[in-house]
Length: 287
Length: 345
Image (cartoon, rainbow over all chains, first blue to last red; front, side, top):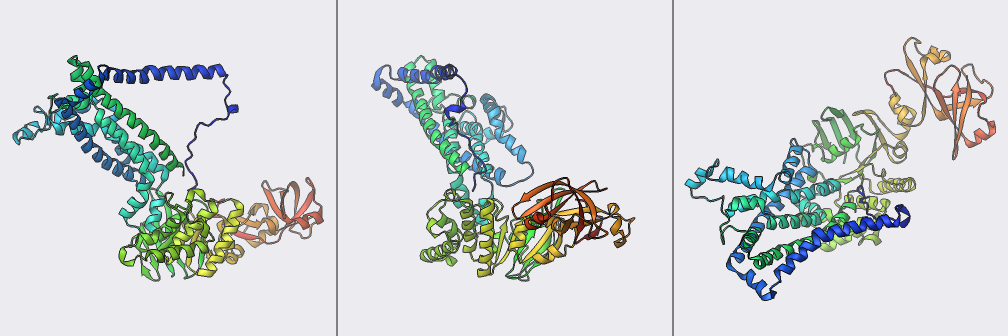
């Protein structure tokens, strides 16, 4: 394919830059100071606080029962919500990018909705629906089904909040690639599934990885929405971010920062994978 | 394998892409669908392939109704305008794709596939490119790989959508001659879409001229060029000058003068002379001279005619006359076609 979408990289030759050297240096300096103050410094603070009393205390804080239970819950939440949103994201992006149907724009808007809604509101929605005073709360209660202040509520809220990540990443990528390759596969006798797995999927592989890693980071790090539906029951409905807050409020700083450092590690890994995926997506778009 | 197109109508919203089109494509022929963009030619091609469903009408392959059969079952080879090669697969795997996706029962063995693919790559003269990726090929090479991939499934019909549209001028000319020779070798019923009249005239056995969802004329290159059925066909195939009836007192005996009619003269059907050779010669002034390789285009203003007229002379004829800009000359149309005016350019 002859590169219908060309991504412009910023490899300017020296001649193209007309600003004097001191302007460039000032701009670079401001950017670096900003990065240092708002990103590097807090990250360093997290790790220095976490390891302040030595590695032994750090590990001890992580081995505490409530901490382990919060890590487990966070992993379960991510393990359920990320695959579901992966499935949903791929299907929605496929439908939007490769077909035209009535209500397409509405669907795109709805996918974006969680981005524009405050996480607290997202959590509150579930309390209003499934809570005891909510629409179907009494019925659920009568049948002994717990959603709010229990694991299902946390998973639902997380799914809602992380809903757009995969779809949002894939829609522009798939739209840029068009549907000619899929049509070519069909003409050549491939079935719908063969077309998807042999043609569509390889072309969006890195887009998926990018979307999943962001989705996962958000799923594990979500505070607001989960906080509303969780009920903060120690050892039961506390995820890692909620547990960090509890520890901090109890003046247990070392433990709080030790657990927080897990999320910081997650952020660093996410950043690394995301950067690689970005390069690959760029290649896939332009080739 | 012949293709019959019966009363095909296709609309996209309020836009009628094809308006009750019927057409027969005889077995083994190379047919061009020629027309300006938006005339419905690509829609027709995609309907033949099964990539688009018609609102009404039928498509028959060898007399058998295929309108309802899925694109997968039609056994057509389709070459897309931008080739649509699978970018993540090598050239070899691209060509082998149609064979690889067959169900186990009908899939050839690995070594059979290999042999077949290499034969096809030889046919398109790219056997040393088997391990490359599409991004590493030139436009012309991609085009040939797309063709090899389409031929790998032994299609009954080969369909090509603007096959040379995305190539630069020289490669385009080379490739279309190559396609013509290839077709003479393998004789597969082929339909290609083009908006380039030169391409259609050079390559096709038969040309279908289309305009606004209708077929204007079907015929060999000579037929559509020499005997255009409508002003549209005449205008679309080659440069034409218009002479409106009222400016044509000398020729008005050919048709009723009160009815608005238009005479069409191809630019190379115009003689230029310094003295009037005939009573119907028109006095004109040379406004512009443009040399285009072997031909010379001369723009003339005919006395009493508001529109300029373009004449094309061979370089020799131009040099013999020694024409200059601003000169007074006499223009004599050699061949005039008159259509009653129902068509506006």
